[in-house]
Image (cartoon, rainbow, N blue to C red):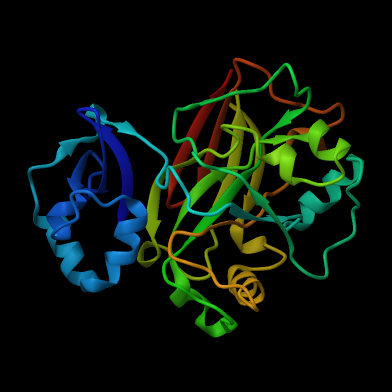
Length: 294
């Protein structure tokens, strides 16, 4: 089940992709009274209908909106809270970032969290503002993003999957020079347009748990990152269990799970982004998130 937020006839709406991924079934067809609900509202309402019933409606509804006639937006254009991020959560990425100032190459013993301002979050085929008057070392990071589906706190590893709604792709755009000069990661990761998400939000029923998916990024069609989400140092059950110890998560909260090796800063010399570059982030079973740099 693939959900998306889209603009059609100058109106922002939420819908489901049909099986062929060529058409959209508006969410209000599935959920009565959902005409004005955004994705956060749909997530909160989702468990009021049996999953099989939702799938049956999607499979039988024929009067779809053509996908090529809409503008696909970020699945959650305006997250209620900062995006929660995991740093240094792939072993190969830990090794490659040792060249960055204020970043050591020790394998984390506990998850490294930071947050990222992303309101609004941009979507598929949107433009990333390079802020070139301020940033000289612009980087990319393809990441599996998980979306929380229900209010949860003090969750056990065994209960973690029950808290998830689904998954999407994120590109954790990073200003490395800002990141290192400030001695912390928040500002260099939070410039406007630095959080592309999408193109779709895939319901957890489509993906085995914990996800073991191929994850890649390309810059101007050159393969840069190649990994598998099964190689996380701290896997998704561990992340949710640890993060919710003393912290309440809410429906629609977004967690970026980390990035594999191959970021621009990891090359010698570094391969940072510049205006005109195109970045494609791919995750098996979800799709491709593409953005250009301006």
